Image 1: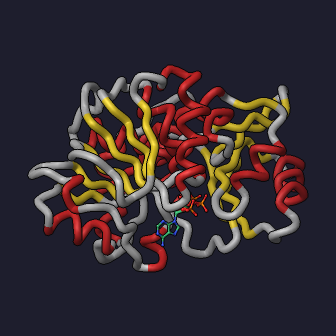
Image 2: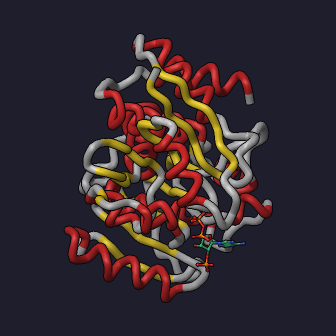
Length: 272
Ligand code: ATR
């Protein structure tokens, strides 16, 4: 059977094996997918060992996404733009790196939440790795505006510079949290503030009734960002759909088949 895995450190709580097992069962694909704890200083060796054992592909999670980007001999355009890799493909061409996180985010917004991005005003909070991976897939849907706000303003401005050359010149803008002007149809929290139960200090006026407020984090309880957004009249959505959709996009790249995510998302939700 073809073998896949997810590398991370820590990795015990990864949901990827459950998600990919469900995709394989649903599509009749013969594969095994497990999780592997790679030593913090031993990611490349762990990948090579897996390839030697016959591994066909892997997902990569914290803290190895930048190292995976360096290790790959070839990169997809979206992995180049993201500057990080969450999906590896091993074949006769060597190691190819892809990034399916942004595509997963966009699929969750457009398909699962049923909210079009085209022509909308989108606010991206954060300018780290997670935000960077989201920019190109968002731009591909031609929003009216994509404003990137970050605690460190220079990092947001650098992202705008990078993506201005990739079709975002008329759409992109950057700033700090306090000076965000106007309201938005979609607000995405790509900061890691939710991990510390913190709320980035943006004004509540970014929301209008019905704004889609999406936090890339997920958990049993809504994050502080989602609670705040809902109190301001926004529609809250956590990152579980994005997780399932990025996995579906990786599965498609490896197996050539797109799984149906709705049932898998529902069952992952029940298991939270
Ligand atoms: P990730 O891969 O999760 O994006 P990262 O690259 O370290 O992680 O980026 C973390 C992001 O969350 C950054 O935008 C960071 O802001 P800075 O660029 O100013 O560091 C943001 N962030 C982290 N903690 C935050 C907090 N408590 N409030 C607001 N923003 C925060």
